[in-house]
Length: 404
Ligand SMILES: *Cc1c(COP(=O)(O)O)cnc(C)c1O
Image (cartoon, rainbow, N blue to C red; front, side):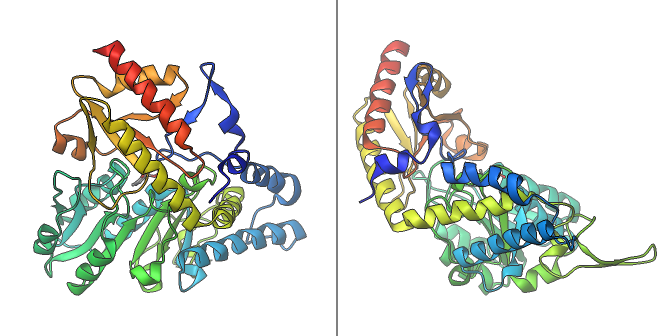
């Protein structure tokens, strides 16, 4: 078992007080906290090797370039990509998805279909809607059931030779449901569609294997996996990245520029125009090392224990309903109490030092499905404790008494 107190000591913010109370941080689905080793690595970069990359012959530029490219290879191995040039640095999941939808604008034709799931974050809905508007393609939606699970029979029925892209999240941010993406990828490929997986909520909890999944694209953010904000990765299969046009034009992404014609750089640089978040990209590698040192098996064990305890304790509260009751779940509990607005509970427990998210969690279609304005979402990380869950449950009980 993990020594949670020792791990907590790695995260300076976890010993802060908020509103005079010890912080209980259960908003990990929005962003994770950062260990000292990650915080220090940012300063070390600027103190010791700061320079622009891929351009200078001078020593610092080479050191910075090496560190950036070593991080790329580290992430390649972490997600088991075949080539390091299939690993693109982005500013986050949103950037990665937009890079792909922008590329498909030159591929899709009127009558083509894009299949999205009803469990998506707005980041994985809106760019596809914009793409459909631009190209005349049609957006199709995989429905869900009362447990928050996607209905696979309905998904199968949506697929046809018109389907060009299927896009779905690995784990739902609003409900924590883990989607059967391996099955979905196989089915989508059988009709010749490309598949993008939004892995933003998966990477803090598991190590994705992109070759085993056989997905065409896998997008995620660094900041939800102990890395810095403004960092992320888009994995794309080499053949797709060669097929898609560049997203942005600029420095770094070209082979040769004349006013008559510009030729683009090879992968991955074709998709990395301009000076990137160099420190962030390097330190994302530090965060990946940190998580692997703890071990994803250990992370999952701790998070399963937290999920089980939270589910059991919260259901002791009369009138409390959990959304997302499917079997396959990450450590997220989304709930409401009869007749009380989620925002009111969130505000009261915030005064007690407890950070949860309230609202629609950038997934309004899910809230519409359940006919609710939003939920209270407690999302747990391996550095959370059973005792913290008990503190939250008591606080929610107190808020309920005050509000009813
Ligand atoms: C957080 C999140 C996003 C967006 O990530 P950004 O870091 O804001 O770009 C997309 N999809 C899911 C499922 C998320 O949880």
